[in-house]
Image 1 (spheres, one colour):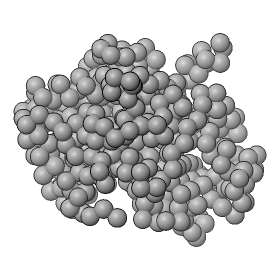
Image 2 (cartoon, helix red, strand yellow; image 1 turned 180 degrees about the vertical axis):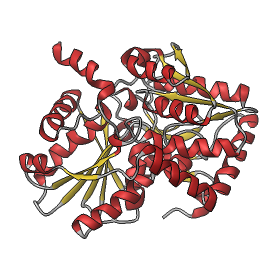
Image 3 (cartoon, one colour; image 1 turned 135 degrees about the vertical axis):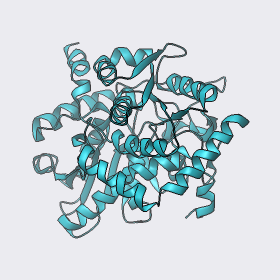
Length: 388
């Protein structure tokens, strides 16, 4: 395993690091220093636990999907229910952790990027609760696809800035948020939503999202008396997946499986490169620029990936697979009809792969599927797609 010192410098094997202008590096150094100071601080953690319990609604259940398991045959399917969190996704875990850190650092203004809008909603929610100014950058294309989430953010008091540069998607929103931070770092805290970006962001996001696997590990031991045979999560930037994997990384008997859209196959086709101030696997075009990507799930539409996922892929510890839009839409409907749970389109990627994998396994084997979010935000989009 990588040394603690390497991790503290923000490297996972050859991936990670911080490739930013000198003035921004000072901000990253200070953020890193504050994060390591508070992450093990008893008072900080007591406050974090309080809000996760009383506000977010944790811990989230680990639900046995009995009908789905019977229909698919093979492995028993358990769903880690991040869709039941306040705001409807895993994003709130990290938003609460980072805003408590921002509060201690004296920040008055919070900025964030968002793709599907779930991180934007979680950030706006946390800002409303802690009375902080909130600016959310979102690709213009995504504001159209996720109009309901844009309204939710504005309702919560946030300013949503549509970004029309480039493809008008998640990558472009991150570009603008980083530009804002460079200009306004003296009073602004960038609440980054995914396990990407310059150090310490990937380590910090993993820390706050690792509660997912901390809970699921304890829950599966209580329910089944043993660890699962596999954990499956969708991967865009990688925050829900790294949270779902974290407490199993050192358990070699547990397969870790990340599921990507086949039109944004960063981990299956990407090459090592630097994007947004860190090194990871990136999809590049013939000119060596980040390739145009597409996913029906706005939250998975990113040409890079978290550095730890890049390391897990290259080292062989985790497997990464792709799934088609058709398979995702089928899984979205099947989970809804079979278990009465409408998943986010992002999460439906993980469900779709579980549908392929489970029948190849024995009935006494166990799969945990991380249900990273609920599908309210996607129902209208899916309605339009199915109508076509």
